[in-house]
Length: 397
Image (cartoon, rainbow, N blue to C red; front, side, top):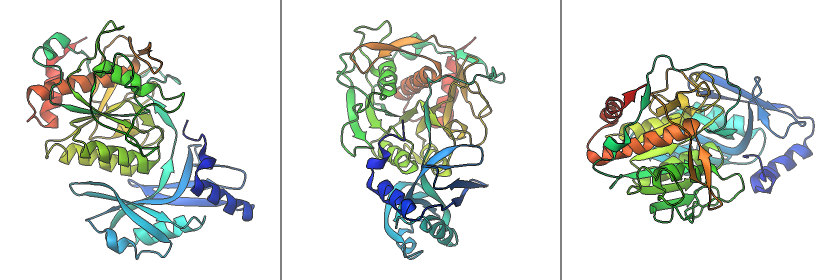
């Protein structure tokens, strides 16, 4: 989904022209990701970059930098190829910037090296596009499970006894939400934005944009046409369409969710690798969001039946609330916080009809709703207390 129409992008067309002018050039790019050195390479036969184990990327003439403090002006002097610097994500002690550089194949590594040598720079990475998997996708099942965690059933009559999410803002970062659907028209929309189109509208734009509307239905749908209505119809929605995995766009999505006042951020998807800029942003939200009480960032574990390793996906982020499903399809590992038992259900679809949702997409959406209900009951709770209250109020299978 991410690689479509890329040649319509001016910077990529320019880059490919450079490669055509200089044929038979092989190149590699090295950068730090947590404590590891990542090496990606390309040559004239490949329209992409890849790692030795076959993970593929697109690379832009942009660099993401974290500084130890708010030190954007000195970065301009790091290298003459830097054309523009803009703040990308700012929260607490986390200061992330996007640097645009001259689009020459040798500039990226040179500028990365220059930035990493500066004392005010914590790390620097190229802006990357990698493959994303919606959490409802299921393949490659290995049959593992979270044996260390009990499978929980959420008690909705008790959770919904006093409220339906009043006063809570939930951000859904996904591939677009069809708010013209009859069952979603009553949704209280606090903010909507399309990261790709840079416009104040999070409507689906492509045929593949189906996932976000289903997630929204679990949370906000009216009863018409559904066996089960939305779980938190009185909460407010922050709808953010972010259909690709450019690191800079993902960071912008989190930044906008924070600025719009999100109490909870739902991410029912994962990429094929965890990058440090995303992990740092999620950690900052969990530490500094909601005036220091912590914004809950909920990630689906994924449905490949595989162990989550330290950098395998966003589901490895310690500061996130990672939700698995009581199923052999669910990904598993020490970063998973909750495992739910929940039957697949019908939810809203982009054609005005209804479609099934299940797996960890459903589980993470339901946990998002449960957290909203608990937070509406007592908005002063921090993340630790909130997660504890959810676990204590659920029954064990």
